[in-house]
Length: 177
Image (tube, rainbow, N blue to C red; front, top):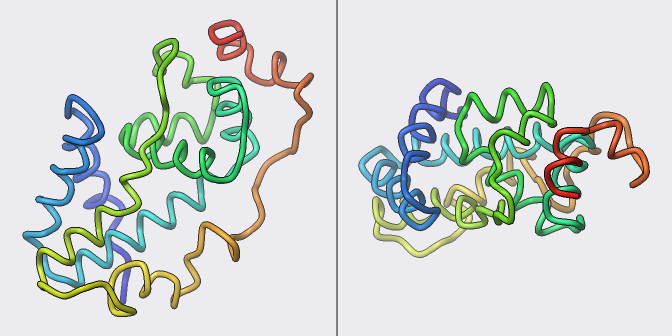
């Protein structure tokens, strides 16, 4: 099963990114996907997972550390989902220069979009009327090796110590520390 083409994926994400909050954004995505074929919904999940894995970078992790004050597995995953949910331009800029997030994130803002992980499953349930099994988007993605969790590829980029962050991400450091 092929992933959804990146242009189609980002078109869906960018359209939903204008929503007032993550609940509305999630619902827009579920509704948009539920009108597609089951194969396209699975393709969305595959592409989402590719971008979650691509965003697993020490620079992104450093940005999350500064913004949230800590890093652990689940919040870091949900932060990467939030980053994807901001749209293609923000995602691409952050991967190139994580410090660019200083102009995106308002102060004291929760950068968490956990529910993005369940969009394809909800849309697939609506489209097929089936209960989740191995034919659902997450099962197919795992069977293709797209795991952002226990079997994920190693984090990319250069690891850091907390004392490196002010020089590594000076705009974020100034804004949040």
